[in-house]
Image 1: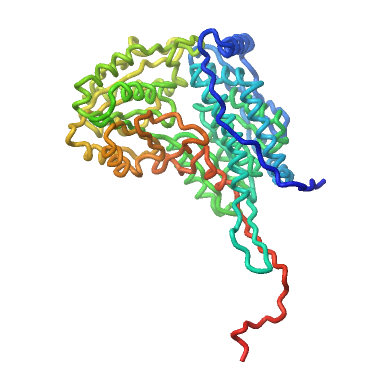
Image 2: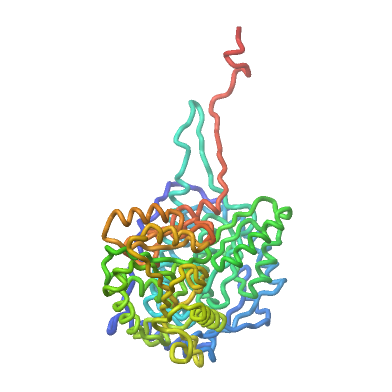
Length: 551
């Protein structure tokens, strides 16, 4: 049954979700502690695949360990097999026409309701699942699973309303020009990472909001929180088949999806290596497809802080600690290379940085006094330890943290102490390669070499995601801004290089860091629509000839 459009609706005004502090004695601290206690009593949970709204239990079981207590696991999940993925694709294609035809205000209402469920009814449950499963402390889980996820849904609705309002400004006499923004022809594959529950919701959510149907493969290390997000979307009213939830072995699930003739877009967040491989695989399959697939990806970063001699020392040091060590350096935007003026380094910056880092507590997120928790798993732990050892072997000086039982402990959880390495080689391995852990490498430059150092920053790494410039001297800020114009998609003045907020700092980088389609802005939605221009003529021709043809 078609639904008449009897009004031009306007979506409610949107604001960023206020973040709760979880300070001792607050109601939110008590609510979160209760959610954590209940979750720990009830785990491990069972997570099925969800295809066409129905749970599918394949019997191919895998576990999501708790990284702070790896002998236990948060959930057991059923891995999608070949037939499950095939059913998910077929179901998504079958659901497409009705979902795209649903009036825009109804699609918008579904996602606005999802935002309310995230920020209200399920807030503590989502935050608790992110703390236990992904190793975030309460604040990091709050700004992710509660605030950013609801912001993605609310601001997404606002941005799509603005997108649909983009219409031709001119109409010739007797005609009316219009543009409609069609969903893409086929299904979208969303491949989401472990490190942000919010990204897990946005990767399938953004394409779905503009009428696409999506096959969603979540990260194995974020399966349970992402399953909760799926359940919230279903409760909000996303119809069966619009988003298909298919956890499973990444390579197999993704390969099957991108080999399908109706594959139309990839929405990806993850490693640069995997993204490049998928791009090549999609190119190799090009003759199978009906059109040219859209490829949207955000990958890694080798993010920098550059500290000019005019910078305020305390702010620069504390911002550096947060940028490098919050969430154990496992943000795509996390600081990993630090360039400091020699005069500041020797006049207080070094001592303040090391004394403050020494205060950091590392341990399970359930202990609210811990600033840092575990890294996500065994491969991450071993990789980080390997990088630190390589840096030492190459002559780097470990100023704090490092390898060995005194600085890391994997006996119960994957805990790595915050580590700072001083190098005299700005091209050393930990200045160039992404580590994805709590390791900052420092290069101290001569004050007179500020501009040379900016060139060094620009040319050292293949990535271009985030960076920060610390200076009180406006000329120094502008010089760095201009010389580093292509070195970061998000740049900050006197502020850490992490923490982009939906609706405030659209997020994404170029070079090896991705396609820079700016999640958290209107830009991302253009990638999941295919515009159709329409012209309606109201006055018929009376003659085919032009006036210039007449004699």
